[in-house]
Length: 197
Image 1: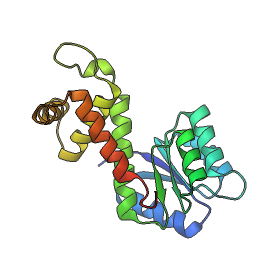
Image 2 (image 1 turned 90 degrees about the vertical axis):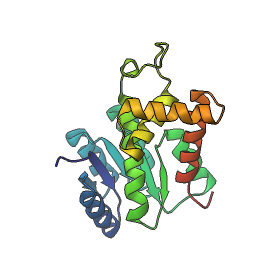
Image 3 (image 1 turned 90 degrees about the horizontal axis):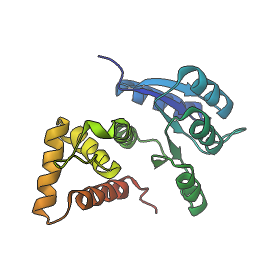
Image 4 (image 1 turned 180 degrees about the vertical axis):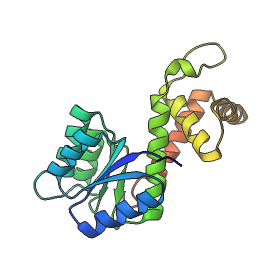
């Protein structure tokens, strides 16, 4: 079976790095590891990962520096794993456009599902809009496309049945498809937010 995706894992704590690399490899991902920001940028240039999981506070280049590089030069999506969840850190995480912000200590039972959800969101966002059309022929909005990706991932459905499931749910709740999908994504965001916030 092929890899589920290529993930760059960056942490200056070698034990944390080894734990993450082992856990994600066991979950079916190809892992590229780096223990500092400069190495992370070099690996990202050479190996072109699909996703990066970054520690924030490291000697030399911080995770924020690496994230800015990945966003501006490599177009590599990223998420953070950090011991810090103060307001300033959270604001910077959001400003950089991170997919998620996980809080240490490392718990693979939290990290693997968060990585899988990030890959599901990326796959949904990468699909051409014209690949999935609503009944009247308009391209699906990003919100609906991402919600379909989540339902496909969660229930192992193909695209059409996932869209049908969302439509039926929206109808049963007396909401538009768009409104129901927005509500679902808000719930997913809330569940992935750090408990301390």
